[in-house]
Image (spheres, rainbow, N blue to C red):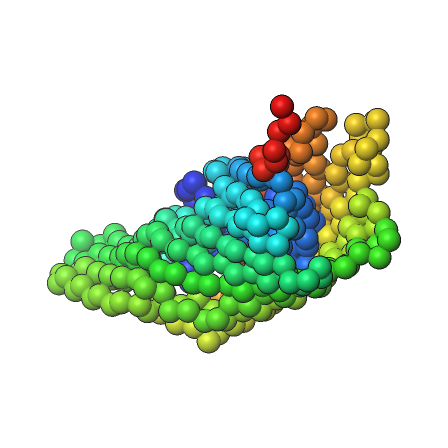
Length: 389
């Protein structure tokens, strides 16, 4: 079934299904905690997956976050094994207050999905005809978002994000016969997306002495994407077929909770469900199923104002398990993570490093094991205050 060719974002054969590999858009600090985020509320972390958390930022602070990652992947099936490496800029986000601690804004650029695969297979028909089949795909869907959040009272926050999705995805299948009397067959498709979707978020939060609690929820309604889909088939005759707006993103909801003790220990848990089985499929060939995701994570900081640098560092660990949204991939996806935060002494800036190990697939089909290293700089600067002369 192999070999594979690396792309910028992914070289996974699993990205040939549906919209490709879907990104949960969790900041690097929370990826180290198993990719939680719905119930997380941190004044020094920008979390695009939970719009209600935007007002957690300090009322005098401008925040900027940029991340890049590199991934090493091992693929294996009954035919062979292969190793690949990929790397790319991951996301860019910013956040700042609009009116004191009551209203805040966030924006950024992130990937929604990635496609990148090159799979070759050789077979025969009753030993009479021998052929090679090559599956190839690349591209992906990106998104620019803008989010606004408002605090109600001192314990409720509401937020909403609007996402503009754009990008191109190419898929092709070529069947080439060794026998000259049999024509080759080429099937290629090109999908261009330019559409908008929305997400709403809610957080309830309160602090009792050294104990802080957050309960959060998010919701997205099903959305038909504005897109152009062109498919061409070539044998002796050429056939071109076009369609519009044949793809959808699913209705989804998520809930999460977190507990923080003395600004040192934080524990978080998330659950989300995406109803992919109720959506149209961009390719039309793959059955989709609902996706459940469970995530758990912890963060520890021994002493935020300690003299020893190791006491001021952030130490994180987490894990998650999720279903694949493609029905034929029955085995769940697993991920465990560990991460570290390195704060600068005289600034609010923190450099974070996260290492994730993930597994998906099954021995009967194809297995994928990967290590992903993500590094980001979370920059916090006091811009909104009056200087004394």
